[in-house]
Length: 295
Image 1: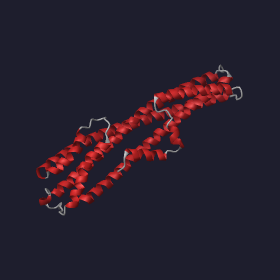
Image 2: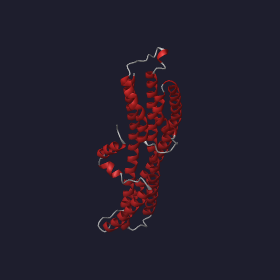
Image 3: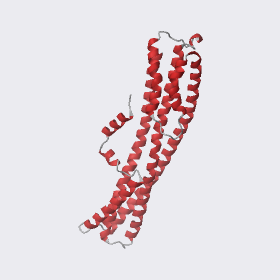
Image 4: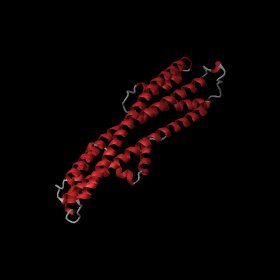
């Protein structure tokens, strides 16, 4: 079984230098404050280096104007990306909540049917059913508890399937109330329920990333205003030449940090889409294996 700990360990091993740098990108407002302080310190360093390196007014205006334009464009990209992701996660969550309600109804119906003929099946399904009914939209899903609830039924069902020598016939109504047919149907319902809960867990985790867009958007706004103001003032030749390098270093640092954050957001969204595909593929393999064991 793949656990959260093993996933985190594998993810840590796969981190490259870019991923490690992106850990320090603008993810929270606290990080934004820290990076702003670093930019101020770099500006002081630039002021010292200004005695040895000079930046002409024309170059200063050209660089700040270009940075302002690029930041404005990337601000628009970040806004569009944040809007898309928020809408995608919200729609995805709403669809899953609707599906969970239907899965609960089907599982309850199956438990009711099995209780008449094979009550032990219903008793084994009860833990997973309770895990789903106690779910409140927006809350964190503990997958260990979900898997534990399903394990109560699965381990028992597999043992019962191995012991049974009877087979049910989909074309024979007389076998539809057999223990084997009820066990097969119950396994299908428990697998479907777990898949829905897993996807709700994924979407809940994905939804947390929405909050990381706000610091990034504020960073782009700060860069746009900062560089635009100094581009205008620089064009008026009212800034001493010794201040050109400090301003450029500060703006370039914030721009680099924001680029790393935006890159991380894009790659994270693409990776999340792939995780959903992989999760679906694994779910289908699991369903096929379950059918082989119980069919």
